[in-house]
Image (cartoon, rainbow, N blue to C red):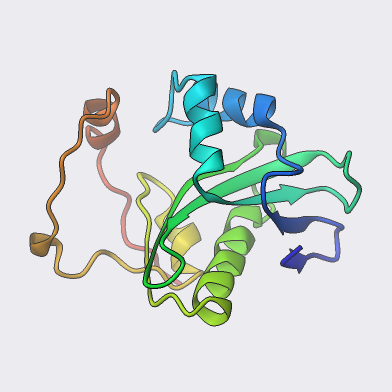
Length: 163
């Protein structure tokens, strides 16, 4: 466990408590960036990542209410992805809390100095954890063959976060 809230929610690293069936359903059926993702692909992505799950208690059978994956070399760089909060638990600050806990874990405890993520509509959530628009965007290049690329990029970006 890396963090616990007064309401009993806790963030745990690792896959031992992850409800793979539920995570697959969340991503494949509800997450705009992962619609149609196969169960095999979800399992392989979890196995190859640092996984942070949010649970509604410390018990092994506690309900999972959120998830984030981190793809990292565990030394210099980390990409936070597949951040998902169960619809019934949205609006409670779980996404911001999870993001902040991951930033602390990765930067303060592991010494990683560069974190990256992408979002279509949750800029304000991640700004609370210290994320800013990508600096030097002209330096970045990519090969992107995701089947959902056009639908992901077709939306207007969210306005910058303001306090």
